[in-house]
Length: 411
Image (spheres, rainbow, N blue to C red):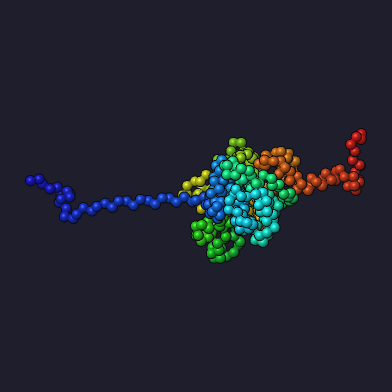
């Protein structure tokens, strides 16, 4: 008879426990792209007879035309406005795109300028849209119905004969060089708490300018940790906006690898995924080096690196809305009103032209497709205008005691 081993299962009086299978780890939830989800929300608000056409149009513009998500959102909001008009306001209501005529579109544009609009637009309730906004709506209609002609949904575009309304061009708001310097310098101090008692300063929590980014997590606002060094990130942001003239959306999507230290340039990806080269000056380089060394690693923490240059306090990419709020907060700290990210871009272009920069060079730095867009900044430089007036107008020359300007043909 075989001898039982002491450690064998038969020798043990207790039955062997069955191993419970390990629970599978829940999948890691990646933060969804809020811009893509907002596109789905807009499409869901479009009336059912037109929703399929709008969905196909959105996919075509995104994949084939390569439109940015922000531009696509604007197109869909304009179409939502049109479809709401066709189904509710037009007489009789229209539920088929093949029945749309040029008069329906012209009536819709006139309605946008004169009557209330639904909450889909950025206008306030009860206010008519400006000429520039109506012009954008017209551009959306032309692109959409041209898309329908290409897809053989309709034979001819009803928007083909519509004429773009005339619109006045307003001069952009710009800062003086002294104001711009004060604004950029305030980025280093606007997060400092006022000198109060230790107990009150420990209990007070400053409002986070990135509330739009962290609102989805619904966590209570905490004081800024000294290790995060958000002031270094804010300094870099202001340098990019003013020293490099980038848009807020371009700063939000800028990658760490876009900076080329060996050539002292940054590669900026603008509208339509068009890239341009912009020099980065010494102050911006110092701000970038300080941010990469002392702030960004702490902001990133244990999170997966998204690759974007500017991060929020939660380690996620800094959103365009958050950039807007940061600039407003810094401007308030600097004692400046009516300042937003594009004002710094306007100031960047105006200061370049005031310093004698060539208009074509400024066009390249700003990434404008048409030089007419850049020419608006030549009207902002008041010092240059006054210099030309004083040099060439005969009454002004006589007032300052200068000889009469030589006429054409005179020797």
